[in-house]
Length: 347
Image (cartoon, rainbow, N blue to C red; front, side, top):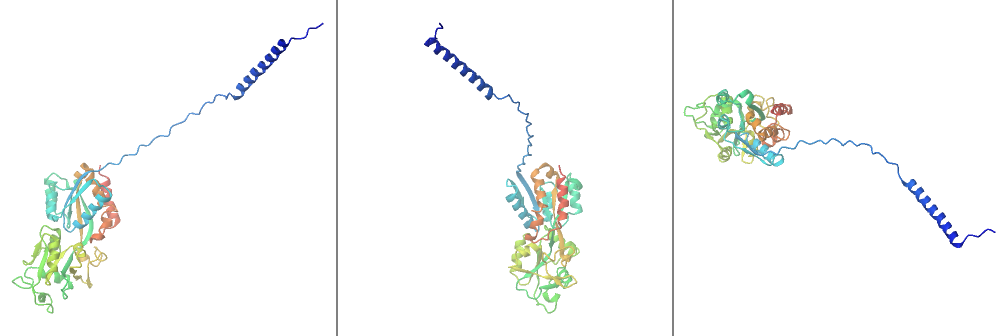
């Protein structure tokens, strides 16, 4: 007869089966959840571009010269220091064209302003001081000015004059041997009172323009009171009913409450100086003249702030934009662009 299994034996068998099932389940679980190894695709880092750092400009730019050009250049300098290079100091003087060029010749200035072209003898002096004018000096025609004849606000008779009348009244002994000119000498119906002549002195390009171009180098009346400061001329004319003076249009524009401009007849009727009439081909052409600034290119190469400021002068933010605000007619955009091209080529 077959023996039946004991209780302990049955329990052992059941445990064995149970353990085998557990091990089998664990093995299947490991196989299912083990991911196949993956190989990441190689990545190429994007090339980095290092921007050229902006050069922080410092130092000074020294300018002197024309009192006529001074308001325009001072305004350009102010805008440059305020909006572009706050760490650069631009100093603008107004000693006069001739006086400024005398400083420019030995290298005391970075730029010099002039209300007339540099003379041959001045260029020769530059050469004598070691400068090659053709390669180391850049002449920039910065704007156009209208020579303005001004009189007292109470003068009601001489508000219109011909160019010849203006020229003749300023000439020595044009009317009388004693060099004393009366208004009635010019036109009989005008007052029999002495004309008081005023103008800028010999330091100024405006004087030289008036003497050389307008008066054709003929002697000026000896009674003319010539002054260094244009503000002094404005004050003198404003206080004397018989006064007459000449200077740049900008000083008249800024003092219209004190003085008035004479309308000049160049042959086609009286015309007053305005931004619409001042120009080499416009109605006020007879008294229109270019004004200049000269750049020391040797310094422009050595001092980055000098080159940068010179570029600003001929930029759209410089003379082109600010000339009209200071009583000058701006030049065509292509003219300024030509100067910019020259400055851009400097290394």
